Length: 275
Image (cartoon, rainbow, N blue to C red; front, side, top):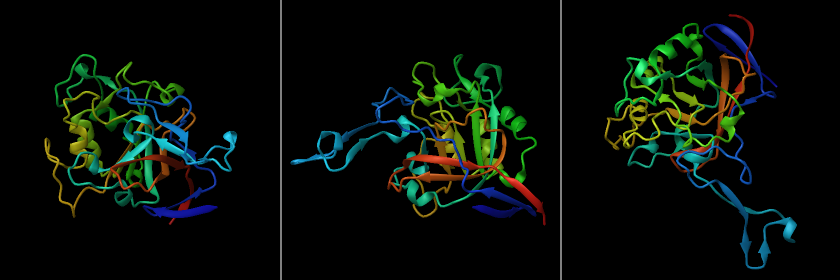
């Protein structure tokens, strides 16, 4: 199906039948990406009395129980409820069905080689997604396609689908980098790393707090006026997916929770004509 829409007086169309899936499939029996050495996501046949939810064991159908940690086991989308006392649900926050979005590819910098900062202080092993890197990558971006931002880091290969991030700690956003993203007006931030923050940051989650406009060190938010923005982590966009503007759809399970496993898909644009 062809879907047409207009942004900044330019008419675009997408083919809804050809989405580009940038999620990492969650294989309950196979390899998975992992952060903090958390227990793997798993599944098992449900057994209730004489009922066995596995056709291979004589059951009439497959009927499984799933166990997962959304923040640690793969692609997931989270909301401000991730850092607040108020139990804010991603199911209520994520309302945008189609999101004008830009995909960029960047190479994080060695933290001590940049003036950008972080809290707690930078160390020699840190690699940062800095304000300078983001400005350079977005210099020619279409202004109407910054409601969503997908950040792909290099090197970029299939190992991201099963990487154990405790072996080599991932890069993260500098304070100035996330402040720049906020100034751009990005509502939906997607990255191919496990967190916008350093894996071990004394529990400060500085970048999360800046992005969701929650005072550093606080877990309080106005229950009627919290941020509508989302963060999606552990995506994977193969090298065949080109940088540039797309239409994004983020699919989630309707969990009443701060986060849900998710399936973000991009739609390639065709420019029809100017209005």
